[in-house]
Length: 298
Image (cartoon, rainbow, N blue to C red):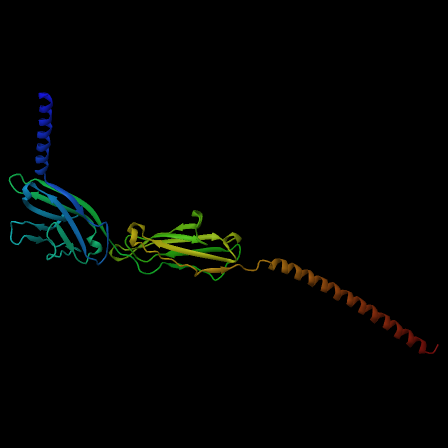
């Protein structure tokens, strides 16, 4: 019985010692950094920390390991800001645990780190970091170049789809009659770079037109641009129902054959008529000659 009580007291003591030790830890319990944010927007970051007896010496924020914000509750003023390109701290709304950035730019992208330091004598430190990407989403649809008003069987379709400038770059996909184009039809083209890290992507479509590409006499081509990493911010850019091609009349060869046959038959008839005409003329000449000879004196 004494042994049981001793074990219970030991477990109870270890539990409280462990809890006390946890209370002495310096932790960044949670870091709130949005993964994606639109260019020009305001964004709020959060750093939830724990220090012994809530005695915080300082809290610092870094972008790509460069300090730009410091909060020291024992100093006056308690907030200090170090300028960084594209980082505009709203000092009126920021408290350290809550950091508000205004008008974020593409240069605001990077790894954000929150660091907390406990009071003396140990000055224990803890930190946590997370990435944030500032994006620019295009408003316009992609453009399609190289279109024709009609295609005949055996023609080669050669088109190029070009996305609008964006960051991150858009992913382009070709569709034929609502189905994704076969890989062998797609031509990967080099992307081009714009200002501020924006990119314009290109993708070609090339194939020999056949009857299977027409549904009910029409062929519909579509190119979609998607920035899938933005989840609900994804924008679909498409040219849908604009490129409709009518199937040409393919019986022209048969018609030509029939036409050629008719022409040959007509030529034969004309030849027969000429022969009959020559025979008639010859017969008339013989009759005239005979009459003239009869009238001559013997």
